[in-house]
Image 1 (cartoon, rainbow, N blue to C red):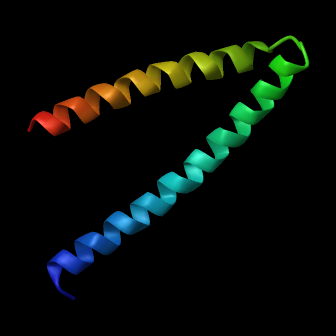
Image 2: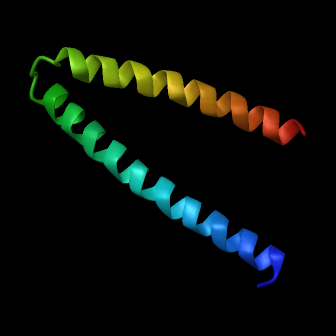
Amino acid sequence: MEPKLQTKQEKLKELEVQKEKLKKLQVELDVIESKIKNNEKLSLDDTKFVGELGWLSAAAVTIAAIAASL
């Protein structure tokens, strides 16, 4: 198999894995959003999840900025 084609296929596989992870995150966010809309109290785990998600978002932006500058 040609190296460029193999690399593209590997990247596509990784994108599919990331897509599945994003689907799981979306489900979690939907649950939290529903709780907020229904004025339900968020659990400690819910609050921790939102905090970690915010931190990960900031890290992703930083990594993307560094990658773009290379």
